[in-house]
Length: 180
Image (cartoon, rainbow, N blue to C red; front, side):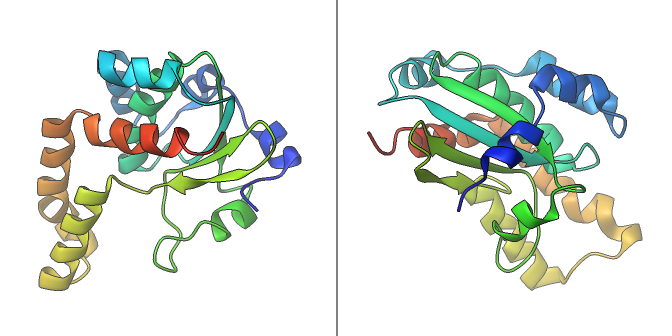
């Protein structure tokens, strides 16, 4: 099961979410204001095979979410047949437990359903090439200690900056194009 109607109804709009961001508010607003949607992605999203509902699992403390969710939401806002809601995992742990990444809770996650309630799949917690880089770093260096976080994640943050959300949008477009 992707998500229930109750879980969808518990989600909030992007405007409500962004207004309530407390952790890393400057980062969230920066990525929202500077997010760019390539015309090729906007055209694909405008031509989806049917209506879509996207439930994004997120928390404002998550650096990956602050870099992926704003550009994702901005792109989805260009799609006339896509509705988006944001759901915090702190109060809806059962939803994230159904969408584990390698048996671990990781966010952001974007769950996609069509208008008939068919599960079209989910994306997250990072674009696939970046997830591979992170796994390689963990294999090579081990999980970082708190005092090593900045150094450990520096190449990952550099990847996000260079990519500008393009890979996230490409992967989301593929997911949204599934089904009828």
